[in-house]
Length: 212
Image (cartoon, rainbow, N blue to C red; front, side):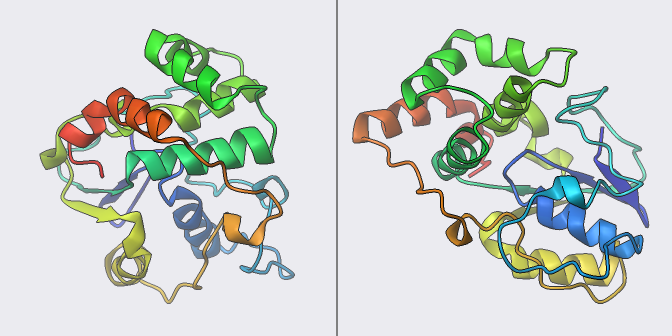
């Protein structure tokens, strides 16, 4: 199901694909940001809260992508699978320490299917949250690109902002760049060439679906 529907536009989020920024725009649209909120820096969303109209598919039921209303326009944001893994591992494992996993452990869990089993747990544990961020984009967005009317790349967040201002929220939006890891003290994980190739094999469906 979509994460939110507004003005006949549905947004579908795969974790680590710019959804935090979109979520902050929705929070702003609803008038829910605190007066002292600053869009600069690396911050924890726990102190801000979810927008009223946001369905957190990572941690609540129903968790996984399903068809929305046929008359709405559907849109999503995609990301290179290797860059997405690096971001997820750096953020959730090294930064927030949600799981005690090495890179090798993560890859083994993904290959065996155990990562999906953890993600589908009915209990909202830290391990579940980490697993949701490491599952491939096909898990969240499906494998049919034609299902979406508008597909943006995370490199195009300026275009996403223009799109949201013009047709989704229809208001002027702040220039959020949420969860900017370059502003944190956590050093980004460095992958070996073998690990990179292994990740490319694991997320082969994402490449075939052109979620890259």
